[in-house]
Image (cartoon, rainbow, N blue to C red; front, side, top):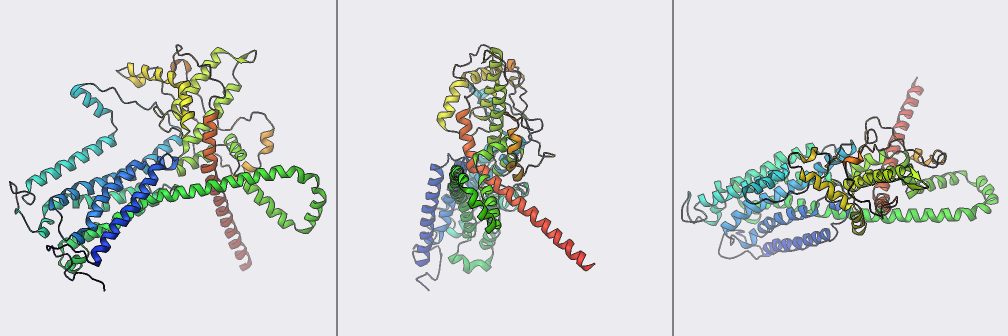
Length: 584
């Protein structure tokens, strides 16, 4: 055994800088460096869509706040009681509960996003996202600003204020931390200062989070099966935090832990759970980014190889008749496997994504909304698809769209911009390049500003005012998952003939453009000269590329897994039926 103080943490006058103390200090330093590197990576890549939905600033704030308390307990043996009891009290009652509260908010993020995506999937109408009201002076202005915040935000602020108030009251009421007034013994021994009724609130907070709120969250998210490992991350966080609080209390008040407490201080029972919570919160998103990057390279390689194959097919067809005869005679199974492999590669191409969006986007939308939480991308692509179809069917004079039709199409385009692109008004803005968004802002921004001004001018009931216009591209049937026809990969793959029958196929699930144009954008708003049928091309290409490289490969793989699962079950049933016939 190395050089370890036999007395352990004895609250003596000398710090424990023995081998065990050095080990604790090394763990604190190394883990801090690793954690800071992970947080720096997440901060620099926070623009990625699958990281943006996780609310990376909130996750980093929770991790950093808990890390303050973690470093304190990791160094508890080393400093050997040479740490202010007052400072420990504030860390225990502020940093630990605040870190846990931030973790709770981060965990609820999954449930909130899943619920919002489900509403999007069910075709709920979404009003314009309410802007922040103008601040009025005085108490009335503060009260209006308070009322404008969400219920969840108000609850968080009230909990934080309550924690600070309770902690301050306990600090002032106990003579352990000052000699002036209060109850208890002034200047107690360091070991006794860490015990008593003053520490009960932080203990209760730990127990409530670990044993009540945590399992409740697990119950609420039990039916969420996302591809981001988010539910798994939350499950690990909650399970890892279960043993800490009971063991900490037992070590603090039970004499049977006296020997263990010398080398493994009571708060250290919380350390494994805290480290695991930090690990999955920071490094699960990094792992997802690595997998997404690998999938992107794989998808691009598949598309590139498929395009190369298509270019080579023309030259191969000319001289392929003689080789084809010998090939068929030589190995038909090889030909069959080659065709199947080629078909599978073809499924990852942009052509098949376009085909899926035209034939029936519902299965893809259902997957994107329930598993990847990117349903807004599919909704936007279908909106642009239907808007472009409306443009092609618009009335024309000498080949030019008439003024009335152009005004109506402009209103529809403004609606798409408001609901799916603008970060100020959209509940689910698509993730596109800044230049594309700013170009669209220049085209539609004045119209949106006019609509918002009409809404704000109606102080009595702004959202029922005709000018505020609950702008919604809703689907009567497209977003209904119950009873929606199931489209398999094979149906997407064998639909070329159906698509070739008509130049402009009418999707079986078409968005209902139920906007009364005269009620939304005032006639006084001039239609920009740059507004034409290609106004959404850049945004559409950007979103479609994102879907092709992220959502579509996962969707294709999930359909394959579903097909294999059904095939396996069918084979099992057939085999059992065959055995039963043999017995008879």
